[in-house]
Length: 148
Image (cartoon, rainbow, N blue to C red; front, side, top):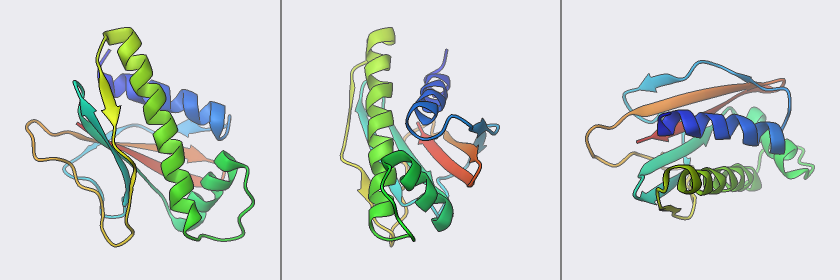
């Protein structure tokens, strides 16, 4: 099983566990670069290296943050990206634990990146593949990015 497949399987499991049991995964697509809308990201370093990201429309990301955190928010504000990054940090941490257990690959996480004025970018290494994994919720679509 590829690391991207493991990432998606873990992502679906964690979304079901921590956000909403009624998700629908859409097909993963390969992009030529990380989308400009993606400003929330996290870098995986070590034996396995990648950049991860999450993005959605503001109202969708707000509802995602509410469902994940169980905090009531009336509108998008500065805490929404922080909560989305918190989910990504949790998911990525669990993914790396499973990667270490199953494949004996040791990697670690850098702190999440959140800068609304600067989108995340993948390192310039070959080959670079950017996967976009859209996940549909009752409230809209959240896009997850894995660039390896």
